[in-house]
Image 1 (cartoon, rainbow, N blue to C red):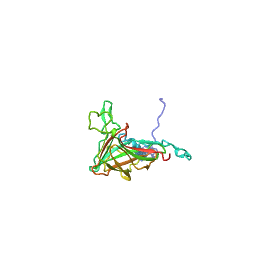
Image 2: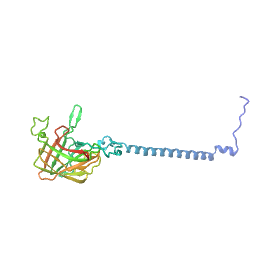
Image 3: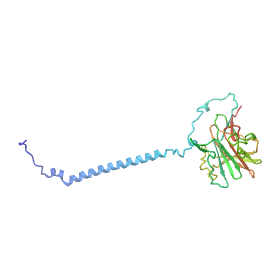
Image 4: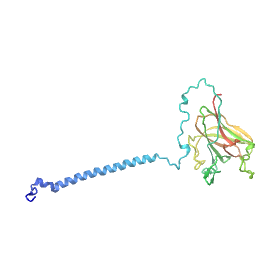
Length: 279
């Protein structure tokens, strides 16, 4: 180790140029270019992530605003339309659908939102909303009803109105309050029935008003309601598994109809009956 000799650093200009400012500038330029590429790559990555995230969250449904009618309905009868029914003997099928919803709107107060589920109440298990549906008609208030057809081939529909005398008093729970009734009709009431253009979505009862209700499509007909009676509308063609929306409007002066109905017998209020075309 003691005999090892060390050589001096090169002193010519070419070699010394490795450590001069010219080469340093080249290194700085290369480093600067690499940094720009690096920063650009990061910015493009952030931009792509923001676009992807925005697209992802734009397709996320707010469960707080989601309603059952907004969900896509699966086909209950896949491929049945391809079956040849020629020569088939039909058996009469008659089914009735209670309204999915009944809503009220007011022409006198077109921005009024009527209470949602007025017979709902709080219990120790949480909020309970019974299936009771309120059907109200006055000269200012109309009722909107939504019904869904079910069975395949039952494509003849009618609306039925039930106001039997034996059902005027509730079956249970109101024995000590004689003024409570299941239905009340004053005199004879003419009711116009309109198809509404609501599509396949249930209306939002928490925001529905006369001003924002669906537009009328066409007139189904007029029925006359009275106490202790059963009345049927004109027949119309209806499609399988389709939501139909109607407006019931008074066409009589001093009109008053008020009824509560549910799934329990006897039948009260309005229901939609659908049956097969051939029998």
